[in-house]
Amino acid sequence: MMEGSAGLKHKHLEFTLASVSELSTSSVSSSSYTPVIARFSADGGVAELRFHQGSEFIDGFNVDLGNAQLFKLGPVKSLCVSESSETNKERPYSWGVTIEFRNEEEGRDFHSAFEQWKEEDVVQGTHLPNGAISASKSKFDNKIEPASAKMYFHYYGQLLHQQNMLQDYVRTGTYYAAVIENRADFTGHVVVDVGAGSGILSLFAAQAGAKHVYAVEASEMAEYARKLIAGNPTLGQRITVIKGKVEEVELPEKADILISEPMGTLLVNERMLESYIIARDRFLVPNGKMFPSIGRIHMAPFSDEYLFVEIANKALFWQQQNYYGVDLTPLYGSAFQGYFSQPVVDAFDPRLLVSPPMCHVIDFAEIKEEDLYEIDIPLKFTASVGTRVHGLACWFDVLFNGSTVQRWLTTAPGAPTTHWYQIRCVLSQPIYVMAGQEITGRLHMIAHNAQSYTIYLTLSAKMWGPGAEQGGILQTSSCKLDLKEPYYRMSQPQPYTLAQDQQPHQLLQAQDIPIHAEDLEEPELLQQPSENSGAQLQ
Image 1 (cartoon, rainbow, N blue to C red):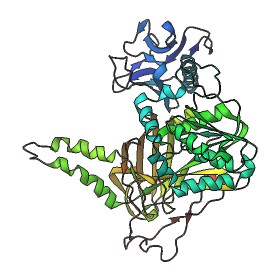
Image 2: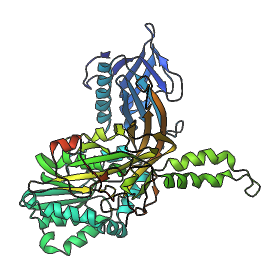
Image 3: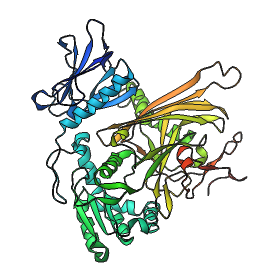
Image 4: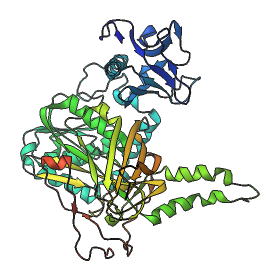
């Protein structure tokens, strides 16, 4: 039960809990005599969450709200994670507590209070002149570790990496077409280019007749963008480059349209989508346009014996029992799991897919930034063939929902390859399925402060055949992967011949897809193959 006002006028705000426990330890439960209390306080100017049982403070369970995040695990259960701090010598690592509430309403109230207190703890910047940057810590700085940010901005500050993206003609050409074909959305309007990089999208917007473009870029690439834009004076006179993060800079006017290329591997890697959403909230006029406006993560189980063997064989080095007189086998198990914790980035033949894909839609115009901290996707597929399932294949597409033309940028297998390729999460224990069998599971992604996500994947195959209605799950396989540390295989799709006992199943379309309301719920991205679709790729 919440005591006191929900506002922050009071020094303390308390909640009675069902239980609280540090990860990997036993829980502390409430009883009718000694309830567990979660108490928010701001003693000494630092916002903290402390836990008490009766009049006693539970030692070691205090949470600094300045570097903590709260994730919902269920209707009445949440996880509070406190990131490591350079000043915390006693706990130099990430740490978490599981909190169980007495009912759903109290859980919702606790989450609301947590966000209020956390926001109160962040020093708010004041209005600054155009292009100026607040000296206080921004939302970006509060959730991203400095080392990761430094490496990220250094990477994108180099021309060779910008060239790599510019030479992705699927990417650049689609952006160009989406802008130029929708001149009506740009002509006479103010545009903000979020994470402008080389400034190429700002130049496209100016070509489409934008009244003025504000190109916001935090890396050293901003200086190159100024140089490139100055070298195109006809367009450049309507472009202002602002060096800084979108979370920090101030602009002299609101934008009618945002343009950005915030997509990373699996759409969400690098966590730039959150900056895109923050820019929307800070700069975009009501009902303004976003290019792109919608993103979709597509997923399907796949079978690839060659890939599985390739990854498993990497760990064979650690099976040596006499490596210069040393037995390496004690580390074999850890090495084996380590290789399978890396998502595989490459281009693959869509005929490796075991079922039609499903998708998860992210509407950039509606989603809250906090909703991207944790993405939980229930999975359900029907196998098209009988085979071994080695994991989950994923790709994404984004929609430019222009007033004149609607255009998709897709990274699907079978479509022209982009610098994003596709990504596959490989199970260390494959599962077996029959044609027509249902595959269920969960793709759970939790953001971390190195600008990426920890991925938890589970796939299960239900019992098949007589008695299946009485049977439960027949086999389940799970894995944990770090999206920050992929295996860049990045080969082009190899010729793939279907086994004689398999039927060629549906293939992905590579062409543009018109947008309809029903597409966002249940996209039809597959078509029946022609008679010779089982032949090798040329």
